[in-house]
Amino acid sequence: MSSLTMPGIIHTVLAAAGIVLGLVQFLTRKRGSLHRAVGYAFVYAMLIADCAALLVFQFTGAWNILHFGALTSLACMAAGMWPVLRSPRCPDWREKHYLWISWSYVGLLAAAATELVVRTLPLRHAGQAWLVTFAVTLTVTLVGRSLILRHQPAARDPV
Image (cartoon, rainbow, N blue to C red):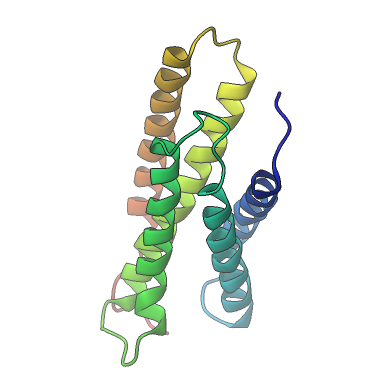
């Protein structure tokens, strides 16, 4: 395993923190000061982790699809926070916030699962790594989609 650069270390540590913080968010009661505090910690951890990911080039030596994943994560975070931060809030702000933040978390889990599987399996060439990346990402995304749709709040749930 190659040694991590400083952006790689920052990315890894904060992404791991994001996994834990996101899990706390989805397992605890919504609304209230704990939800806000953990949520903002998640958002800040992911913003920094995603920006650090844009500085990591060890896999191919150049920009690649993995960097697109970091940009997608940043876009999901922005789309998820916009309904919360804007004033006045739109009637369906909770639904939009839930969907976009949930998708950012699914992306984080897909990236983490892919990283673990690709580094664990005895892959012989880059083609195998890309195939495994696609398969793991697709699997996590489909499971995530199912869970998101199952637990999606109604737009008019009471505060």
